[in-house]
Length: 308
Image (cartoon, rainbow, N blue to C red; front, side, top):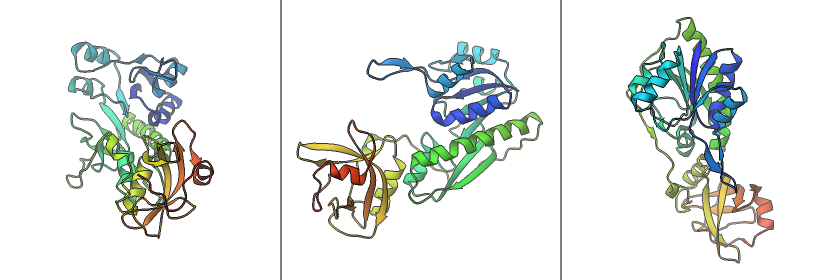
């Protein structure tokens, strides 16, 4: 089939690769514009843009699709279907209506739970035991369209959002190419989403990243896992040179008690409002992620110290 692919981050890469590998004709790739990065602030394409360049696919990076010119360009591709995976722009009705068989979206949650921008992170932060990926037909609402196919997976107790992202991406890619195969033979069936259980995965706010040790250990642990590896939960401590911010990337819950924020032992167990968490992996500013033991060999942080 003639496919327009629309996506931006790494999560979308397996799906684009699978579509190419199954010999669909990718007539255009829509992605976000290159951004400055690195010390020289050179422009770097998005992960999807870079992959499209490797396969010599035409890449378009419009700032908006909400004008007649953008809609006309989109329609001129004469596509059978558009596949959308974490693209980052709203698709207006003229764009949604242009492909002959509509627009399919791969969404990383079990809709209607976690509609919106950060479904993987929010599922982990909320302590959900299960999530998945779904293929839905897009409409003008925010992830409100009817669903065709789904795959579920368990969220492990200590699984981070990064772990979950890396497992869901290939599962979603396989699901999408199966959906395209069914669509090609007119066998893809859709069902409306449930009207109960709707939740929204709002973008992560910076204020959510600072760890509040007064919260219960389960809440703190889920927040650390859900924000790892990016933007990452953090705490502050004084290692002898003033306050320093440290990212907490992995943790586990521990049966221990103490005043919130106090270091309880030499294994980096921190007391919370109820219970405690043990930090397994952390990252200092300008440093690579490191295990807690390595971190403690380089800082003065004895039991009894208090983290902010």
